[in-house]
Image (cartoon, rainbow, N blue to C red; front, top):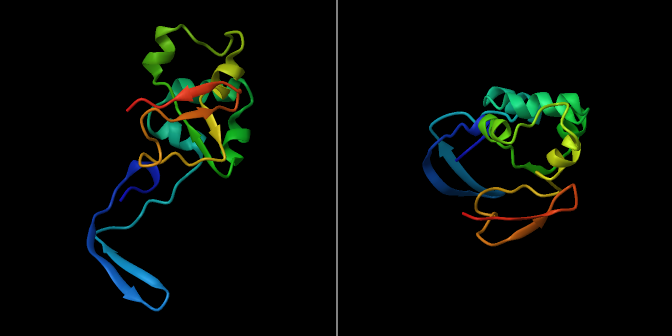
Length: 126
């Protein structure tokens, strides 16, 4: 099972019934998720972090309760020469944000399309 920062724990024993549901014993503790900005910095996606800071989107994205963000790698940003002074960078970033949707991999299926915060369509290819 995955928890915050992509850390995982294994299930040692599953589906132990009790009056309120099921218990699963794990081999470790879950990592509590942290903010999007802290997570992107932690995983080394510094370009995304600097771009959201430059466009004043950091606090907006950090405060969204249910969001999926497709963060291009530092190399992807560099390949298209994106910088904090690039025109329309705020809308470029918004084109990678799905509001009101937690896109866990089982929920992201091949060929499914979503409307981004920028109003553009992205289609999943797995």
